[in-house]
Length: 373
Image (cartoon, rainbow, N blue to C red; front, side, top):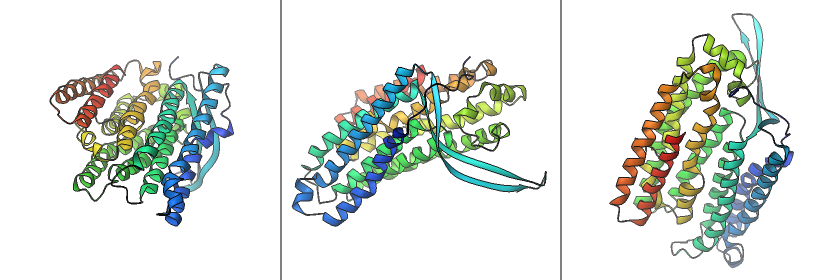
């Protein structure tokens, strides 16, 4: 039954944490080395201003991803969750009952077929873009000994994307989601001395923030709906949200409409991140960043994040407890995807700039996937 099977069999190994941790740790290391050795010949010529520091990190992340994927396939598991550590423990006094209420927020991984598909795509393409950027960035005529900042922001972006894919909670998904948003702003505006690049970075950041406001509202509503069933744990955990019994209780309480509204607000967040109509205006201008950034945003990760969010919500859509209660929202998702697909394809026909053609083509293909979902 969709929405009822949540786990089991595979135990997510500890080395899986390295998938996220290695790029995240590489971020301060590259910045520090760049600060200490910037302008020196060996740093620019041998280490490629941090490119050859990022490369083995992304390669190791890919290897760990492949090991996790191989283990998942070998165990023939449907899905699994694994708590890695306790993040926050806190409590408060409940005036209504006079008791102390406790809350524990954990960090862990959730692995299913959707996870391993995007995990491989993201880690593999991040490595390829890293390889390409070593040649591109170090022959860039604008290079003024600041490429270490590019590689530091690049690995942090990759860490955010991989963390979002592996997260076992919508709360952690949102945290890594925002980390990607920050890094995309910095990378698109890498050539900040150009007015067009500075404008494009601000435009991308502010446009996606519009969607993120609705995403926060949707997550707050989702927390409120599932908190009675969370038993002192993260109410946005997939273990809580995807549980068929919890969904049945919400349906029995007549709150299916509120749940649909929460998911609708979350979908607006996905629309902003994946550049769908009407929050599509930022993507063509994002080409103002270096070419590896264009590849990172268009091909590898960022625009796929919105699709991943919608796909991650699918167990709720398909749950038998809901009895097709989300048909209106499904129609809206298909409608937005259809409008964007046609609109972006037609705009691409009249573009003279090759990068703009690629941007609108990407937008159109993403819209087809939204329609299919």
